[in-house]
Length: 526
Image (cartoon, rainbow, N blue to C red):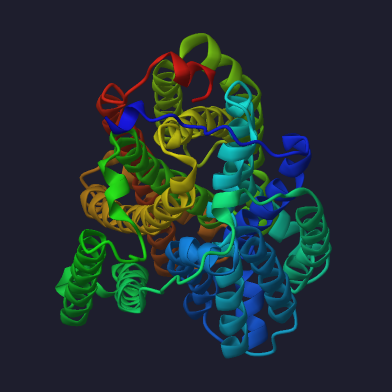
């Protein structure tokens, strides 16, 4: 049975694994931070490049698509030039592309730079995850995975705050220039402390699955366009969205068929899908896809809500996410201990319950709350997220052989990227549709038969007339102000309901946790 396979072969790094962990975590933090650091700086970049706010979102999308496309090729490039060499090359490309982003003078130049940055960053996460599973002995793996999970979750949370502060204090190019010293330090430490196991060295006769890569790239690119433009074009009410989505699904089916065929023929597939036969890997990956969608969607819509409904600045909306980072930090210190004492499944279940509770707490907010009232839900959300993701990631790969870790990490990070994109798109659509529904429901109360409405209307009319406005003008302005308040409440209601659905999505994972294979080895990190 696949789940009975030993997770760790007897091979160990010569250096202290915690020393090797330093460049690994620096590289992860750089890559994950740049997923969100541009978010709050988009208006500034749109002005610099003379493009619309909507067009500027491609600065984010291009990075995500490029990293998503390159992730499945990581296993091939590791075999082609050696895993350590490819890891170093990825750091160089990422750092050089960061310089290009900072000096970009036009939108096309920025998009090319961000694509190159995504190509470099895409190779970092799978390799880092695979190396961590190899260099740590089984009794220390829970603690190592807690640190890894902290970087993966904390960096995107810090991104808006760091980006907002740098943009307001200096200028937007510096959100990319800060990668330069970290890139240099990471390259040096990786070169010095990361070793190469025998099975990750350069292999002769490696062939690239070009057909699989082509259809995968077409699938991801077309899907990202559908997700990016769908809500603005009424989704499947738009003929061109329907055609593009159909094209995307055809490319996905062809891609999967090519991979299955190559696996049967014992040739070199881009992704070895046979790894999905591993029970824990399949269930754990499915859970992480949903969690990634919830995490990235909530990280996107919460700052947007604070800015649009409560008048927060870009920096302050980013700061509002910091308690979530504190929750992640607290969970990272406890998760390893809890896994050893309770086991993986109980910790995942506790994390899911806490995460759902945090989502429900967001479902009770209103426009009268202060920044402090956001802190507790964010703290709870961050604690539950990391407490769930770290042991779930651990158990999903724990029964895989070391030589399968790079391929597994590549596949897992690919589908997690897709999950993040889909989750963010669904959340944006839900807010828009829920807001419209509630606006249509609430507008019925703006009539003369509603005593509360009449009372508010008369009070506002009197207030405007006291400022020397004519009666008809004052009435019109009062009606306009009441309608704007209604739209604000309807929009808030849309956000609130979306957060409640996050709790439902998290709850749906719970039954599958009980299907995970766990034995005594998992309590020690295996």
